[in-house]
Length: 431
Image (cartoon, rainbow, N blue to C red; front, top):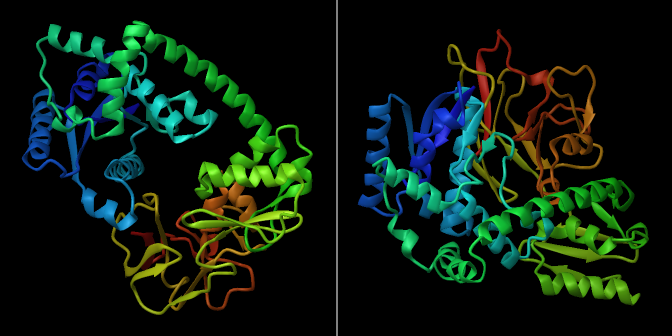
């Protein structure tokens, strides 16, 4: 097994790196280090420290520098969220390109408990109460190890690490919980970390039951009217736990708690709901007499189309989409990083039409003889309602109605796949 160790240089990741052979017996390792460029010379010092450790230990060291602040400003998100999105996207691409089986993250028991508290404050529901865990390629081998245990072991063995000066600042929510809230918890219950960890296991079991119930009833209450997925009110209201189901269906649209509560109150009262609109920053939930329809705020109807006549970067439906055409490089891998598709440029060529997906759209996935509805493909991909609402498709100019060449940037139609005879590549990517 090939393990990619995410190593920042801090005490937790250095502990994980030092103990990697014990944590993952028989595995081979490489180290990934993210330099987010947020602390100037200190960030560069972290990078140099990790590079030096890898050189002494004989580990391959893979480093990437990120324009974190610029990305945060462009996306309108926090620095913390920006760093999270950038690093996990990079880890995923490294696994695809380099064949790593797992990415090991050094979150410990304290981090897990902090995440639970943050999720409670954000109002993430039962799923946020289960804390962190392994997910897909991501493994977290230190979740049952406390920060105190890590520090004691590192000191006992005379090992060094880098201190992140920002960890001392209570300007970050997580740091405030770490430095102000948890000491108070420790006075009330010295074993609070174990108590919280035990509680999270129970929360996870309850959430699994709730999720199984939710998935079983979704087909009864979700319709596909063409513009997007609609929530059918009559079958919804018949459910024993309809408020929970409604919360799960709408949680990706960004409604604040007060707006969601007003929607629930109106449905419970039996008063007229037709014509009401419940707004979030990027979405609005439009009510008719029998359904709720989520729509992007900028448009209550289909969002138009974009014709691509030449390579370049285009903005469409809130995404930056790049089109490149180039001779096929020798030995080019066909498995592409997340957010990127390649096609045979002689088969899928410009002009190319981009548009929102529509009910009835079909694609022929690679290796299948027949076509498949995009709505069914979304189920396979486990896409949420907002993801489906923002889905973009590429259509060849001479394609039959409803047959798409690609679902950006997840699937290419089999008719346009790259083969041994392909000489020209058409590449579509989100940037």
